[in-house]
Length: 161
Image 1 (cartoon, rainbow, N blue to C red):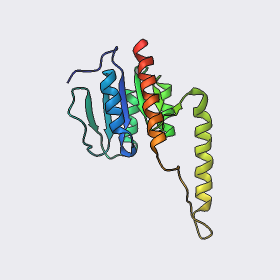
Image 2 (cartoon, helix red, strand yellow):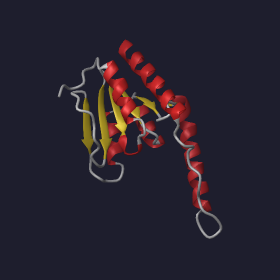
Image 3 (tube, rainbow, N blue to C red):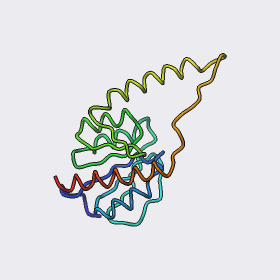
Image 4 (cartoon, rainbow, N blue to C red):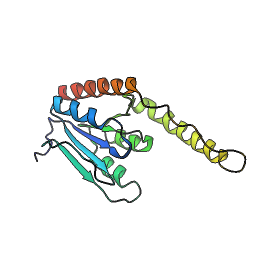
């Protein structure tokens, strides 16, 4: 399998809860980008010299650690994990959520703060008086379309660098 070159971007996928893997493969093929699908358990990936499955140990944050260690300015990281996004941004990577919204230096601080507040609220709701509920809205066609457009824009931008 050819290794990524400095001229070919690599997409690192936090795969365990990623709803857009098929879209990533299609866009990556069009842009000749490499894809690393990182998870704690095996996933089916397309037969392609550019797509590689990376199965890490089932240790806490093992997939996140692998992705963060391999993030660089020539990588695009696909994740919904805010703390992983922060680590990858520090490494110079471009980071997209599954709905196509980017994590960037301007937004990551408020995202981390909101995460901490929500965690505190959920902790306060668990117990005899209430239960934690909610979560993100359902993933829809518009999210998938926004993601495809965002990933395409990012790969075009990286190709120009």
